[in-house]
Image (cartoon, rainbow, N blue to C red; front, side):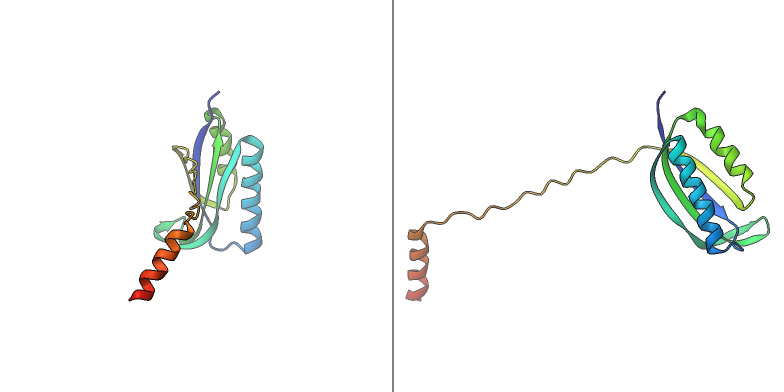
Length: 127
């Protein structure tokens, strides 16, 4: 089966303590490590919302990027719906990021002959 690349963005209740947020995030991370391949995790940060969600005007916004088989997305949704402290979530299928190879061309010092150096020194001394 073909594996796809996904992004999960989620909003957590603003009343949660740091320990509770970390616990929810660790649960999600362990779930994705077990079911698929975890790529990147963005720590939840407190954000103002443009409109109230479940009577909340603020929420912690976090994101997880992962690879997963498409038929397992329903399992992810079940897990997220079962978590009461997640106000809202969105799962988006994305193109997998390309790995960028950086090739560094090392500049090798050019070999200069002694005659050329002497010529330049003489030119400088003549001035």
